[in-house]
Image 1 (cartoon, rainbow, N blue to C red):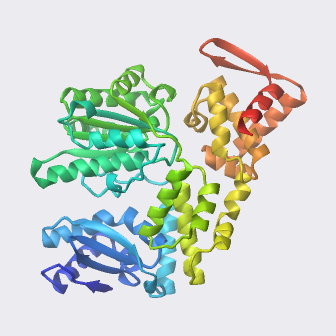
Image 2: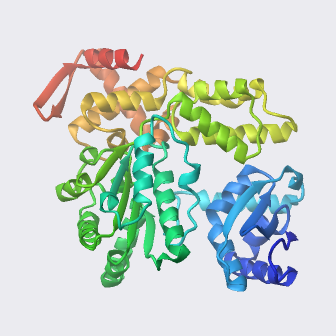
Length: 475
């Protein structure tokens, strides 16, 4: 392993012990695969710097070994330092083929079947900061609310914040940024702070485990005594009555103690299906803000900042092309950037417009350059008064079923996505998409009508007229 002592006064001996502890924590196989060769680690300028050969390795180390590295350093130095992962192309080629095969095997095992939920974090190792959040017209109000919340629970106007918006618009970034800001403030001498950031799925899984193991008292003690609770993807609690009841009591305990609650969801509280009305009422009682999909100006700013962080040079021509064609989430932009970085590294050149066209060719083929699945879902959900999250859910009410069937049919009509691709995007299997398309085709062939329920009562319309209306809104 290549190591540089940097500002670590104890020198190489301490580093060797740090790496020994890291190896014990993650196991020899993972240590050899990700750290032994092709990775340079140093402690300098008050942080741990990890240099890696490519974005793939950087992403994997950030997601899986960051907290282990922090705690290994703290064990031997008494310092809790942050981690910075940097791309250093000169490290390419230092890993043997066997180590690359082991990396692939580790990734394959970790991603087979349903991904395991990440370990709930109660210490400041979340990767996002409010300082690196790109502010634009689409998210300015949400950012201002987050900055207010980051002032701490002493400010009554920000004791509760609920952020909602479609996938990949920055909700997680804001929640993690608030947690890190408040934690840093208290670590600077304002007293100890008990806080926790979890997803709705993690909260649910912990609760179920506690019930099974008859550890309900310990679960309640852990959550209800917090100074700050942040729950991402809170819409995951929909239709889970026991978990909702437990969370309602947790919410009441934290709120009555004057502490902070941060929540994020893909949909407005009233648009999350099968959610306890008492919870909805409490969600609406605090600061409620929506993050819109990023406009082109914001997408360009995000792409510039992330490219700079990766030390990837992008011309204005390339920036314009990418932001023109990637109109969905920030995650899509990040994925495109990683792909461009990989292509540039393989060809040992800078990113060209031709390279960008090649990188986006698959995306443009699937989205037909003009209409995306996100567009179709948004239009369909709005027409029926539901949310895209409902279409992805397991709900089978008449309204949701009709909307889901139409969205699947329109996806086949307007994009080049296959049945499995549409199914994965909507959280269904490919056979569900096939059956939905066949069912609607039969309705159209027989000139039948479709019925659904609205707050004003049951509505009915010929399937052909419904498709025509939706087509007009999509095009």
